[in-house]
Image (cartoon, rainbow, N blue to C red):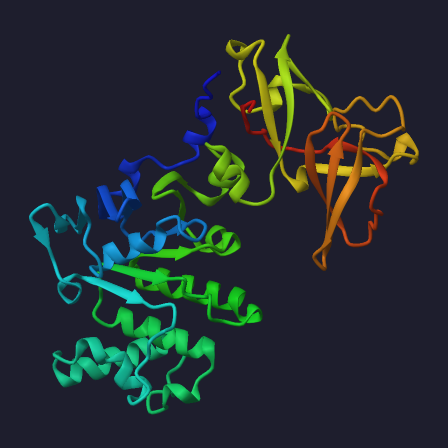
Length: 388
């Protein structure tokens, strides 16, 4: 079995820690078990000042437990957690939630229905002098674009407005770290994109360091400075969204983020022979001559491929694709298709047995069971993994 090293080009696209400054939040070897099951397993992670980092993963992966540990709602069995350099959880330390400089936006927003909007925002700063408290509430309501809603009841607000009030309440005490638990899951689909952008803008304007938890890939990739993909209680990969998506370091990350297909082949004489044709090794990131003779799986995503009906004029195919292109009998068959509105995603079983996905404009309506030729059309390096 060959071992794949992380491509150096991917590492170069991630800012070195020294450029980020000191971490505001640090987890070092944190473990939390429930019976025989480890929900969080020796997890280490740093979050830097002003950064919005998202913990992304499927249900049951440990991301929500991690958030609860950060908030002080649960205690780790081992390891330590530091906020702004001070230990808040460890072998001999545990700081209660209300004594940590951490704000939390709950999934359900958790506004108090018997309080006005302004009173909700002021809830965590009731000990402040009255004039400072009123000024802070006024400042935050303006920040979340609700300046005239102070005397309203939360029941009068839309879902998006309630979310903004919950955010303002969490920001009121000026926490070092803001935690967001699935912050958009209770919103209508039509509101989510708009609110994602609004919340990111608000967080960036305040300069607060934030950690968000979600299973929504689009959300994580669109709002985060960095994404930490969580699997089986640990971090599989952490980095800028485009790096994690384009250069996954494990098959789990590749398959969880987006829709990945894999084509197999053997590296020989600087090229890999696949069902998509001959792929030069230099289009596959990190695949050098030291891997000569290895059988590998090359990752291709739906937007990397184009499917053309097998009986189409060969001139209509992409001449720069790198595929053989000598015949029009095709190299695969459409076995499934999914309509998304703007596009069709076709699942194609290639003649050698590999399965790939092709994304086409909705006007390109190809029928099930149709023979097609799938060609590669990319302008970026492809990731690869040892063959399974």
